[in-house]
Amino acid sequence: MVTLYLEYPEGLLLPTRYYLHPQHNTHVVLIGTIHVGEENFYRQVDKILQNCDTVIYEEPLIRDNAAMEQLDHDGRQRLEQKGDLNDSFLAAIFLPMPPQKFARDHGLVRENRNFNYAQDHWVSGDGAWHSRAKEETELPDDTWEQIQDAIKTLPASIKREKVKAAKAFLRKVNAGKASIQEYISFSNLHEKEILAKIYKHTLVDIRDQLAFEVFDNVIETRAPACVGIKFGNGHLPGMDAELLTRGYRYIATMWLRILTIP
Image 1 (cartoon, rainbow, N blue to C red):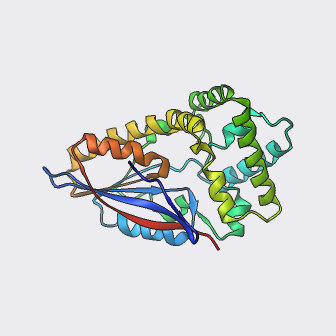
Image 2 (spheres, helix red, strand yellow):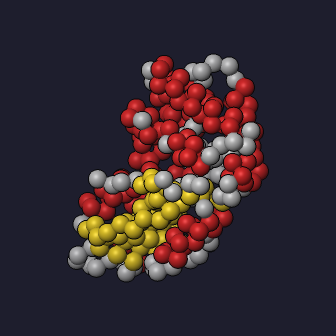
């Protein structure tokens, strides 16, 4: 069982998990992140990854400021849409990005600004997934449609609850009154059992499989002593299973704080 986070009164902690293959003595460091957090967290992660011969990473979904500002604009428009059961709005919750204003208000930074992805030993773990997108700032059409189609099947009570919570959070963001604790709750909206199944099927499982195709190639062609894997926190259970299936043994977990609750 992989614990995805620890929430204490002082903040949110994410796991860095260590593995070892008993036969060829390869070490793996599996690091869970979220895409916006405190700069010190990303510095700690970067320091850990400096000890790895190869790093397999999740590509940023939103790559530039213009795309983020457009996402914020779309979010504000959705706030004005009528109807608590707006499937498009609920689908947008699956983009785990807080609004730019919220990040600025709380001194948070975007993950991809803190790593040098152009290093020779850094390898994209989901480039094949992103290549299916029409544009860098969009989800692949088939995946986005899967999410929206699945959401249409949710009970009305679940949809109403989630949309209400998301709109309440975004209104607080616009008023400059949203707290870190409220962001943590907002970013975990997909963790309810029914929503988690949709999220896992459409955005997690296929990318785990693609990342470990890359992993297998790295092991075969590079024979690294240590491999770092840096992906969004929701990928850790599937990636843990992939490693165990390949004969890796879990060694230990180190917890790093990504958000401080004042």
